[in-house]
Amino acid sequence: VGGGVVPWVVSAGSAVALGAQAGRLVSAVEGLHPVDVGWSLATGRAVLGHRAVVWGREAGELRERLASVESGGGLVEGRLAVLFTGQGSQRARMGAELAAEFPVFASALEEVCAAFEGLLPQPLAEVLADGSGVLDRTVFTQAGLFAVEVALY
Image (cartoon, rainbow, N blue to C red):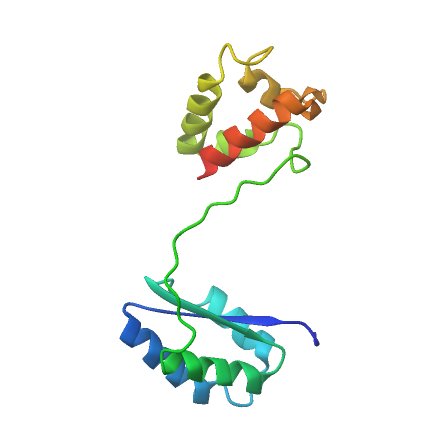
């Protein structure tokens, strides 16, 4: 794998610890492949309250950006954002397997579907359970996606 941009995710319990963690990584990743480091950081480390992401194509570029995090450069305060996908990501019986496996999800999905009662030509829960393609009608697609995504959240 080569040529693409690779993200390195760093997290720590405080802003000071974040800088220190970035500084330790600058030397610890010397000679390692950027994709391997990115994978390990994204999947093998705890996600703590203070985070930084650097990205680049080459190890030297990524180490420079880590050094910038160490010195407090480029850090910005951020807030959590939740993105719900739009029409086109729906599929027949979406959410059914999750609902069968996870009662908390099933309950949340049922609650959101109930909020649509009387607003749609037929009950949303029935549409989501139906595999006939009625979910592809925009009125049901938008409501169905919203219901599944809110229940997931």
